[in-house]
Image (spheres, rainbow, N blue to C red):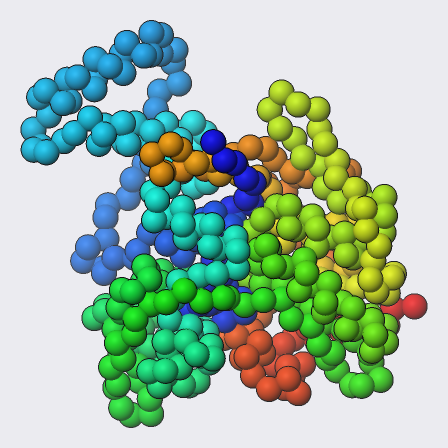
Length: 437
């Protein structure tokens, strides 16, 4: 049985979120696709009645009594046999019962981890593993929600992607996806419906000027946003900027290359952009931290069942030395990205600028089953070496500063010389660093 660790929250989507991808706030480490985990909003006349919830914030009808369940194996077999013999629905097989029981077992173990503990089909597990490799199935458009118009704007297309070949361009506004109206809907819902299986098609209607144009696109496997490095501000600032959309197998090498390029050109300060970064591979997040922290610096403490706490310390050497640093975070910064942001604040005295992070401080294991399915479950919790965990609460920034999603998308995909004008959080980080001694 093959197992590896994920820090579930990947919503890096190509379609991608404007500043990344993958999402939230609705984490899904590398194993979860945020967007697809969100319930679809219903029209007003189809809104379900309110449901009572328990103290664990779980709908009452899903909460299982926590009284002792003695002789569970015998009870399970009795229920299974009764269902197979007498349940009214036709076509129920023993495999159906086992699948439902396994999924239910994972979902009901601990209410607060319900969204992370999951049974995954062969198709889903293939998508998860591709996410961890830095690949995704989509149509290759970068999108952002325009709060003024209520539409989802196309910011750009990926070279060679289905969207570029079909003729979608920056400035197009997505009106419908497969006939479903999306004006005023959440970005993650648009993303979830545009993504799908390789070879399947999706039809978008987009508003271009005063014309409504249809585009039918065939989904394909794409390499999503990789880390990028550049300089921002005036040439004399020597302010390096590294954006990390997620933590995949390719992330540490890409970040290393970017930092080395900045070092070679004389960077004197550094901004790490973790906004909309949903996490990904826990181990790759640790490797990335070692590129920024001195040898021996504690990065994170991991707590597992029945084992002593394990503190991971840096074995690397910071490529840019101890230059002043700032980190950009928002409500979609989760898991491994929160780990890195906190480690930089604790060990490098980096200032965090933006919004409170998502608050996913747990690590999931992903284990294969003999039948081709897999299951994901919570392996442990992590916390800063000083002992505090931000599970469920998130990390508060040193400088809290709101920024709408549309502006962030325009900053990430617009002209480099306009970035500081549009991006107030980056501009604030620059001002902090230029004042640093």
